[in-house]
Length: 165
Image (cartoon, rainbow, N blue to C red; front, side, top):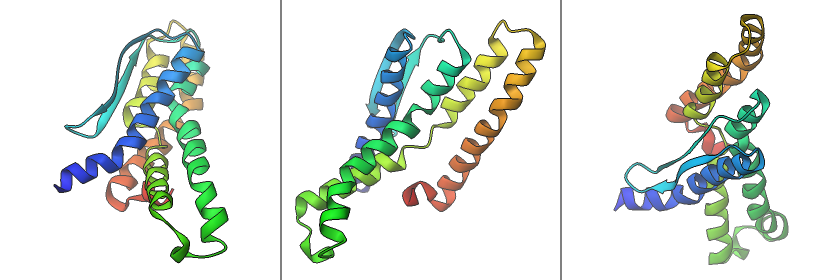
């Protein structure tokens, strides 16, 4: 029962996370090979796509959940937080408000790009046909992003910092 409730809680966030990758693939015309918005076995999903033409497109596809999940999570929570919680407190909340807040928290928790997302960008640079100088410069530029996401993922697995996001 606990795993079913956990799966239901994570579903909106994972689906929005994968949808954001899919939308950015469409924007940058990166052909999508396969999509799984949600897998009930391990509360995950994926979007397999061909490599986009440019490095910046790959970076934006990989970091798309940060932008879309943050925006949607805030948009869903805004009416409840501003109109009800700030004025009337917890007593004024009804079941729709509480459901909206749970969905908003789920979406926000999955805003951090996954380890696979940033490693895909790292590998994009390594597999590209850029000369070695541009590859080195590109790796130096994206290394802080990769390290930051890996650190956030590590911390979220132990400290649940994604919940505070």
